[in-house]
Image (cartoon, rainbow, N blue to C red; front, side):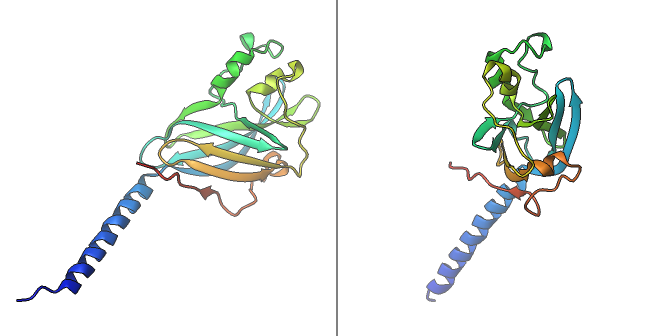
Length: 195
C-alpha cells in the first residue's frame, strides 16, 4: 500500500483554508458595528447643538471610545453629552480648560442610542465644530473657524473590539432635517488585531 501524497497535501491545504476562514468569520461576527440613525437638533442656552445619533451592535461592548472631528484645518475630539461641560457651576462665562480632556472619551455599550454634538449654531447664527474647547472661545482656547453650508466635516468614531467608523458630512447635511451623508451607507472599517 503506497501513500497518496497528493491527497494528503490537498487535504492539508483545504483543512488549513477552512480553519483560517472559520477564525476570520468568528472574529467578524463578534466585531462592533455602528448603525447611523441621523442627526438631531437640540436647543441649549447658548444656541443649538446638532448631534449625530447612532447605536452599536455586536458581541462585546467597545469600551472607551472617542469621536474625532476634522473640518477646515481644525481637528478635535467631540464632547460627549454624558460628560459635564468644562465650566464652573455650568456658567457659560466661567470656563475651566483643565476639564476639557475629560470630555473626549466615553465608555459605550451595545444596544444603546447615543447622541453626540458635533456642530453648534451660536447666538450670532454662526456654525462651528463643537467640542469642549468651544466653551473657551472668548478666552482664546478655541481655534475652529466658522463653517459654511458647503464645508465638509469628517467624523471618525474609534473604540475597542474593532470599532472604527468614518464618514464625511457636509454642514448642510448635518443641519437640515435630511441627515443623509455623502456615501450611500456608512463604512464599517476593521482594526486588524496584531497579536
